[in-house]
Image (cartoon, rainbow, N blue to C red):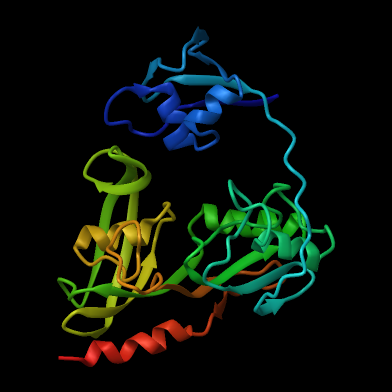
Length: 298
C-alpha cells in the first residue's frame, strides 16, 4: 500500500472534485489510476467518495495499492556525455529519446541507458533511476542525472527551491510583441483535451517565463527562454499564449514539416562537490543551424 496525508495549501479558485485535485495538483495518481488502484480517501477525518468536492484547508488522508514497479532493463544505448564524475552525469539528450519508461516506451529510454552505464547504481524511483528532472521526447539538450542517493537529494533540493537556472533556445512563429519580456500565467489542463495544457487566468499553477529575441525574421524568430517555474509543457504553452507557437510543435502549433524547435541550451546549478554554481551547455543542434537561414528570407 501507498499513503498520503496532508493539507490542501494551494489557493483553489473554487471547490473541485477530489480525484481531479489528486491528478492535477498532487500528481501522485492520474484519475484512471485512482480507480485502478482502489484509492480510499478521508477528508477532515470522514470517509468520502472520489467525487467529493474539496477546498483550500481541507486535510486529506489517502491510501491506494501500489504495484511493484516493472523491472527496468539496462540497455547499451549511445549517450552524449557533457560531464561525468562518480556522483552525477550531464547529458546532451538527443531529440526523439524518451527520458524514462512510460506507456508504450519500456525500452530505449535515457533511464535504460543510465542503468546500463552505472550497472544498477542509479538511485531513486526504480522506473526513473537518478532522474530529478526531465525533457519532453522531442526536446533536445542538457539534462542532469544522479548516480548516488546523496547527489539525488542534493540536486532535487535545488530544483525544488528554484535555484537551478535553465536556458532554452527556440524558433517560434512570427514576431514577438517585444524584444524581451516576462510571461506570467497560470497553467492547467485544457478542459477540451486532457493531454494538453493551457494558460488560464485563474485555475492551475503559477508559471513564469522570461524571453529575449535573439534574431527576428518576418515569419519566424529565434528566442532565448528562461523558465522560472517548471510546469509541464510550460514553454510550449507560453509561446502559444503569446501567439508565437514553437515551430514543429504538433500539440500547440501546426504541422510544418519540421520537428520541435526547442533545445535545452544550458543548465546552471551546484554539484555536490562544488560550492560554486557551474553551467553546462549543450551544442546547438543541426536542425537549428539548418533552419536559421530561413529567418532572413523576404
